Length: 316
Image 1: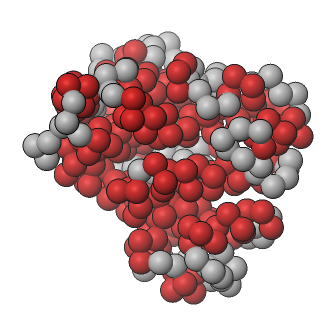
Image 2 (image 1 turned 180 degrees about the vertical axis):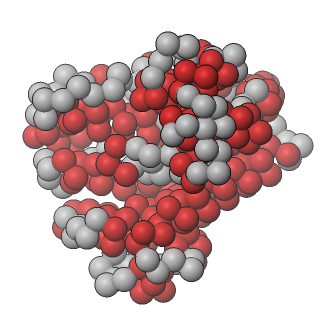
């Protein structure tokens, strides 16, 4: 144990105490308009980026921007090995930046980029790319590795699976979270979207999900081929339209186990990982609550626990 781990663990627990939590998220979900919901959130820790004049999309983006800011602050309190772990954990935001960059290639406006600062892996080079082919070239010469093609979906899936593999190496204690998320991602692509996985993407699945899981003809058969650390995410799901239940289960497990890590008395990477899990789950819930407010304040609508996202990539 070092003084930096003590400081980092203490800071992690303090950040979690300031989260919105289920009660406030339910209050946001019950608001009669986005304006009312945003006014509530602006007075919380999300107020770092949430502004009272924001619409739904801007506010949902701002919730994630505030999460990133808090994780960057937390990283600054950690010893070098903790900073390296955090840099891997926050690669999702680089994924999101690349998603929006490719969206802008279609001629449509994308959301603002997330500011990564010292958490940058390759974004400082990726942001200058003018085509998917250039993105593939930069990724191939970075820690992300070659996604296996320059198609939009190839890049998306290749980056996500590369992130999963890197997380498994950097944070082995999160194995069930990582493999469960990969299983849900592949199930969504194969069985909800009805798409075949590109060859390089299938290759990336092998060390994560095992042989033949990605080629299963149904979700039920896929679950039977998965390792136990991944199978739980698809338990009792046969209809692709019900995959959202697996995603809800995934987030709840991550939050519960994250709280368990925080409850420990030690000062180490455990409470820090737990804080990242709980804060990310809180942001996911709050984004869904904003969606319910946009629907007129129906806190019973599943949107408040299942927020939408462009391309169906909320989980991954």
